Structure formats: structure tokens, C-alpha cells
Image 1: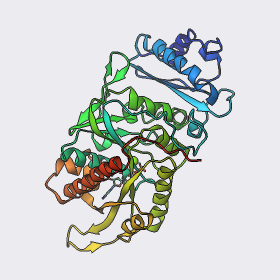
Image 2: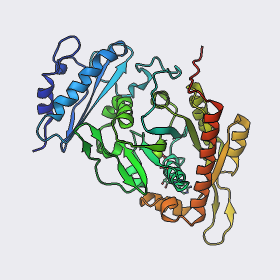
Image 3: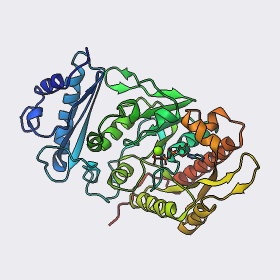
Image 4: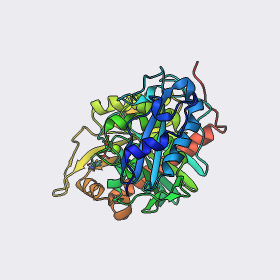
Length: 378
Ligand SMILES: Nc1ncnc2c1ncn2[C@@H]1O[C@H](COP(=O)(O)OP(=O)(O)OP(=O)(O)O)[C@@H](O)[C@H]1O
Ligand SMILES: [Mg+2]
């Protein structure tokens, strides 16, 4: 029988906080979600006490996993700058992390993921510009170049990979603690969407952003990868900034449509990564132009070329342009990404060329920075 919220809370009574009180009485717990054997909740604590609480988080997870009927348990630890009176914040608690106030550069504490040579983010300042579509086809393009590639869906508010890769199954647990990622089209795939149901309330998702991300990086059996592509949530707010700080990124690919408005957001995205010392590998112009499937006439719906021009202006590489095309959208929505399902087509070639540019930029970034030294801003 599936476990209930009440059973979860009862089991947490045996877990003591660093101050000795039973966990449910500390006022730090979010709503407990117990759904079909999968249990999630977060513990929100003062940033200064995060270290002391990490073992509490672990013990809470173990206590819940030991309950009959629990198939997976995920407990997120979130820090608040001020000691909260209990209830987790509705908005992402990302600006207040154990790594300091928002805007702080990445510290030396950002560790790599064992076995993963390079992690790159696919990001944009604006939503809906085609990040996820680009991330999937870029990952497949990198794989087509002979690299071993994984893809991580970090968009906790709107995970896309289950749909874009037509994945319905749930990841299996290995040894009760680590998750086995899903393999699709040769990619190793993990998405928060595999773990939470779409109905899970936003109010609950907010506080778990960073811990969930850390767990997806470190408690998943990624194996050996040349590149992990991270599909980021849209925007340049606290949540995104903190993600950029928390994930050991080797670089970021910015996706933009050509028009001015999207470019303003792309600029914000670039500024965000620069602020946390993550090299911008370049800009992809998506929905760059439209080729009429009937007559072959080309229309520059969003004013083609804006991103290339902007890349030049900002001194970042231009990685390529992807047309607005019905088959890209249709195939994406069906979970049949063009690079995997139409490898001889013109769009697959475009994405492979972009992937080759990304690979070259990564190699360049590595060569330019032989030691993984992180510059700390004054
Ligand atoms: N080059 C393209 N041609 C046609 N359709 C596209 C193209 N790129 C993306 N799309 C479509 O645009 C929509 C948004 O794309 P996608 O989900 O990749 O954007 P996103 O930036 O990840 O969005 P979000 O900000 O919500 O995460 C999808 O329906 C996708 O199929
Ligand atoms: Mg997306």
C-alpha cells in the first residue's frame, strides 16, 4: 500500500534536529508530498546552520526510505538567509544559499561530478526561445561526433525532457540511494520531471530547487561522460543565478531568437554567467529564418542575424543559426528529435555543426584555462 503523509511525518519523529528536537517539531519542514510511493519534502534552515543540518537531511531520507511502500525519497535542504519561522518560502529560496548572498561568484567549493569531463549549460534570459529543443539536439549532435553525452533537465518549473525524448518510465533506484538514469537515443538522461508529477505545486518546488539539482548531479549514476548538457530554466533570476553558481559548469551556450527583445534577455543571460565566472561558449540563433515548405521562399520572421551581430558586439562566439521549421517543432513534440530521427536531414546537419563549434569552444576554453582556477571577484 502506498505510504501516506502522516506515516512519513511519524517516521520523522525519530529524527532529531541539531538542537535535539524531533524534526516535525522544528518548523523547518515544507509540505510533505507522498505520491504513489514517492516521497518529497524540503527542510528550510538558516544559512549559517546548513552544515549541521546535512546529516539530518540524510537521516530523514533514510527514515522515510525504510517505510514500507516507499519506492523513492528525496529530501531537499534549503538555506534561508534569516532563520525562518518555519514555512518555506513560496518563491525559490535560491538567492540565499550556503554559498553566500546572491550575486556572489562561485567559490572553490563547486566540485566536479566524478566521471563527467565537462558540464555545459544551455540557457537563455527569456522563456520559450527553444532552449530545450536546442539542448536535446545539441546533445545528440555531440554524441554524433563520437562523444559520450548526458543530458540533465534542470528546469524544475517546467521539465521538458520527458516529452522531448518521449520518456515515460521512472528511473530505478540502485542500492536504495542512487538513481539509474534513463538511456535514450544513446544519451544518458535525467530529469526532475521523472521524479515529480506535473501537479506538484509550485509552492513546493521552489525551495527544493538547489538541493534537487545537487542530488540530480551527485546521486545519479551518470557513469563516464565526455559532456553533460544541462537544460536550464528560463530567466536570470535568483534560481538561475544560484544554479549557475552551484553546478560546476565548464561553459554556457546562450539561445536567443533574433529579435531585439529576446536579445536583451540573452545579454542578461551572458552577464549572469560572466558574473559567476562561467565562460560563455557562444550564442545560437534559434528560429533564425523561415523557409516556406511549399515554395521555398525564405522569410526572416524575427529579423534574421540579430544574434550573430550581438555575439560580435559582446565578443562571444556565434555558434550557428537554426531555422524556424515545422518539422523541428513537430518532431520535438513527439519525442523524436531531428538529429536522432532524421540524421541525413538538413536540420540534423545544422545541429551537428553547432555541436562541433561547441566542442571546439570547450577545447579552447580548457586550453585557455589549464588550471581549474576560479577567479574570485573583489
Ligand atoms: N527551430 C525551431 N523551429 C520550430 N519550432 C521550434 C524551434 N525551436 C523550438 N521550437 C518550438 O518552440 C517551442 C518552445 O521550445 P522549447 O520548449 O525548446 O523552448 P524553451 O526555451 O526550452 O522554453 P522554456 O523557456 O519554457 O523552457 C516548442 O514547441 C518547440 O518545439
Ligand atoms: Mg525549456
